[in-house]
Amino acid sequence: MWFRRKRDKKRQFTSIGVSLTGATLSWQAQETEHARARQILHHLENHRMLYDREADEFFEAVVESADRLRSYLSEQIPPCESVELRDGLREVQAALREFLTRVPRQEPGDYGPFWAALSVMRARVGVAAGAIADAFGIPANGDLARIVQQGRSDT
Image 1 (cartoon, one colour):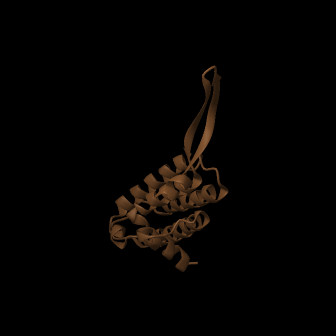
Image 2 (cartoon, helix red, strand yellow):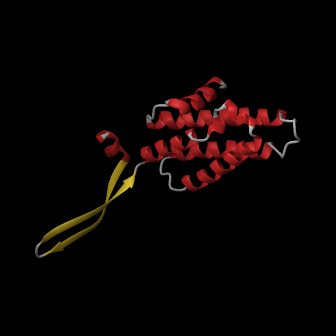
Image 3 (cartoon, helix red, strand yellow):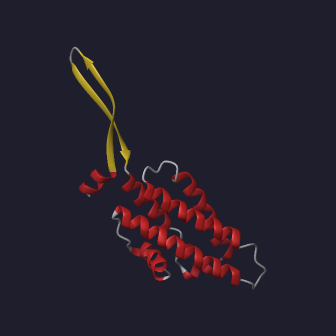
């Protein structure tokens, strides 16, 4: 745990003060790209529509979850400092955007286009999540491994 904390935070000096009684230094702890990547991958893992077959049965919930995740990524991409994280998240966002574009409101019982678009989106997100995990040395455990495995098996 100690190593993780040290790796996840970096310190930036904000001010130096000198007085007759001594000198003072101030710094602010900032989140590193590694911590940001781990947090975002954890957030991806919490969206069951990316890997859970049971979630497929709830069309409206899947579409809503994809839209929420796309919005979340819009907030997470701008502060990214590394190209690997920023490009990986942009790929996830593009996959979600394409899914939402390809899946119009379905007629009851006509889910063929939905299944196809969902499979493509899951594979693209899996590849991008795997690339982010590899770039930052984050192990793909639990449900995240299912996302990454699916993306790697389709390539």
